[in-house]
Image (cartoon, rainbow, N blue to C red; front, side):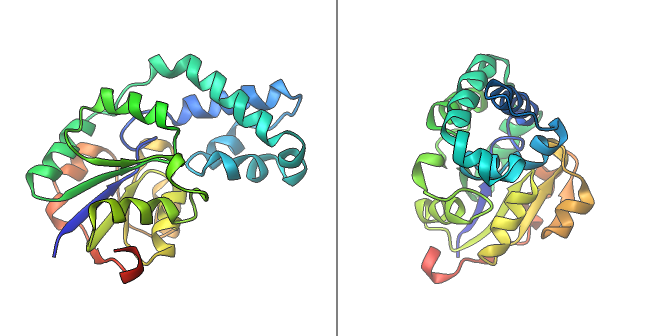
Length: 221
């Protein structure tokens, strides 16, 4: 039975969480809405379709949601060339494939951003998803389900940096591994379902063969 590693991208493989936070803050300010930076950061990892209401409330989503997402994209595009892979990202992906694990990158980012990340990561021939592939973003599990269908995953583990990754995994009964690379704390990742938490990608890489793979439910296979 094949084992699959589903890897989040933003904040897990590429160091983008704070760029996203600043871009969203600038977007909110562009429509004269002020929200605290910490609240925006806490929402990074969920999709833009959910973030506005989560951070600023349903009224702001109703009045400005689409304009905010457009502004966020414009501001994030301006800093895209500043993005760098996190230390050990390429090594982690190649080590997983060398072990015979199926690897799929499950990003809720836009296709053009993910394509840019792929150039930085040089992951080899791995499957990947974007927000274009689903209607409902994290913490909904849709993106994970699509990722698993792409590689016909039978047993899998989800790896990500945010509580939203852990929550999405839990909703489809799969184990998750947390990383501190996105700014979320160890306790909160574990509280949301992570079976273990790693400080960095190289430490995780050393324990790839010991990850808690679980059987994927039949509808998602």
